[in-house]
Image 1 (tube, rainbow, N blue to C red):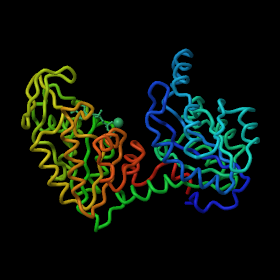
Image 2 (image 1 turned 90 degrees about the vertical axis):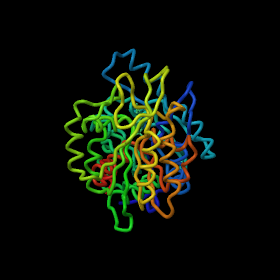
Image 3 (image 1 turned 30 degrees about the horizontal axis):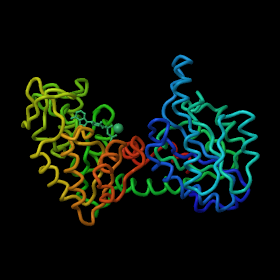
Image 4 (image 1 turned 90 degrees about the horizontal axis):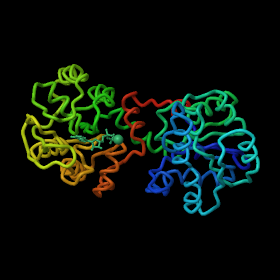
Amino acid sequence: MLTVENLKNIKGKVVVVRVDFNVPQADGKIRDDNRVRAALPTIKKLVSEGARVVLFSHLGKVKHKEEPGVVAKQKAKNNLAIVAPRLGELLGQEVKFLPETRGEAYVKAVKALKDGEVLLVQNTRYEKGEEKNDPELAKEWASVADAYVMDAFGSAHRAHASTYGIPEILKKEGKPVACGYLVEKEIANLMRCVDVKKEDRPYVAILGGLKVSDKIKVIDSLLKKCDKILIGGAMAYTFKKAMGFETGLSPVEDDQLDYARNCLKEAKGKIVLPVDSVVTDAFEGWTKKEVVGDNVPAGFQGMDIGPKTEVLFANEIAKAKMVFWNGPMGVFEQKDFQSGTIAICKAVAGLKGAFSVCGGGDSAAAIKEFGYKESFSHVSTGGGASLEMIENDGHLPGVDILK
Ligand code: ADP
Ligand code: MG
């Protein structure tokens, strides 16, 4: 696979770059510009070579099946124009913004670029054909490009027009397609969790968060790769119920009970579940909070792993040479249920010479909030993409098409 580092002779050439500028917003402002910063090395490299840089990204969701009024509102909320000035500041040069996504305006704006200039195109999801990988749309986008660089790791698990259609066309035309620095780094780090070396064992995976159904495939893959899987968060209660324990009002996916039972059988002791929980009488506005053992009593729900489980999990992590973590251990958005997630952070921070990766939007936000980002070898910028990479044995459509 070609990387942006070894793209040659791009002076004066139009290089289309798919970046991930899907930034969190609040009151029409960028709340966290991490994703914009993460794309800088690739953009700077192309600018320094004198390329004419055309940036594509999605922002939020635009559901084209909704009523026109709703779609218009979603578009207004997810207008990528807010990113252009911020990117300009960070790059130290003007970033042009194109409010359109295709047509004559697009071709004209690209043709008007001079060497080393940067153009940001409006949110790719303004186009209905983006998520369907519409060939006409991809063709139009590719028509002005001399090369393509993929640097949106967070979108690499999706075969959309901007992540898959464009490079597919350019490849057929014999034009270079490459990955950017961010994607290169993500792949290098995550591949270590996919192709497990002997010296990286014991390999301990920690899974948490909300939905078992979302993470089913990854449990299957992890069972094949890991030595231990620690399961916390809301997910754990589906497993506890499958084992015959009481789960009270805890979130349980009843249609996944058979799957959970089967998992536990296949796991042959690899899966470690909580032995206690912090429970409350309601999710919000609760009045009673206590620590219980294996069973969650009627009228209560599990909100975090309990203190004994914190020790149990920390002891497993302490033995690890490699850790992969996805999903918080509790409802960390509420102060009273942060302890389990912080315990995992501390256990990882205490490791010496081990390799540790955290993937997942909420988990990454949690470790950042609690001040443990530096304790991890790698914090992935892609939630779904990092999970899918493990699920699919290292394969992602947006990366495979570059090969
Ligand atoms: P990630 O984004 O890291 O992949 P998920 O999106 O799967 O993680 O899950 C994160 C959410 O899971 C958080 O909003 C957290 O509040 C929730 N969660 C964790 N434990 C529980 C629980 N016991 N009950 C309800 N929600 C929980
Ligand atoms: Mg999430």
